[in-house]
Length: 258
Image (tube, rainbow, N blue to C red; front, side):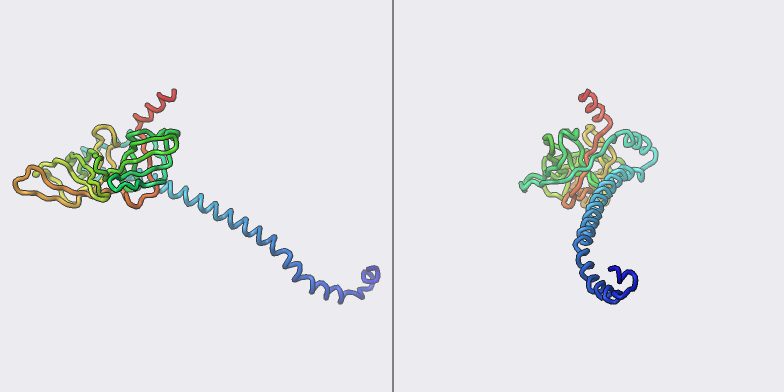
């Protein structure tokens, strides 16, 4: 070492040894680099999943908020009153995930992962990004069961967006088919008319899309027309839904907690 330091006689040997050792050093560093890369990659994937979930939830909420502006297309005088209703009705929304769909072919219901600990209540409106899905019919601490608007036992008061005609929309037991009940044969309802929740009965908030009329039949001698409609909500495809609280219900919940 003394001779090499002062006279550089071993310089060639040192280079040869360095050349031989370099691949070994490189191989020795591979496990550490691999684990570091794996950790960064897993962290990035986790962050991306969280960001994706957050963006999906925000998109669902924004689409739901936009639903209430559909009624702006109707007559201005009528809308002044309706918009006042819409703006003060909805106070809070919460994203919920569908975790189970009932296997009973005669019952259109599903289970969500929110319950009484989240202030969910029986009769609460459930929507997706496109329209009303149904209402809560059973609540436990961590889950709730939702009855779809297509269920044969379900009914919802609606109005025609084009002219304000009111009617009662009932489920048929078929997931994509609804029917308008007891509509006089002379009523002005056409194929393509959008049906919105009317707010009557104070069960469903006013102004949400419910269905689109797909068939109107006027039968001679019959007092009522035969009218079919398709739900606005994507009942067969939804994985996420929104629970809706009205300002009135929020006040009731606040009072009960006090």
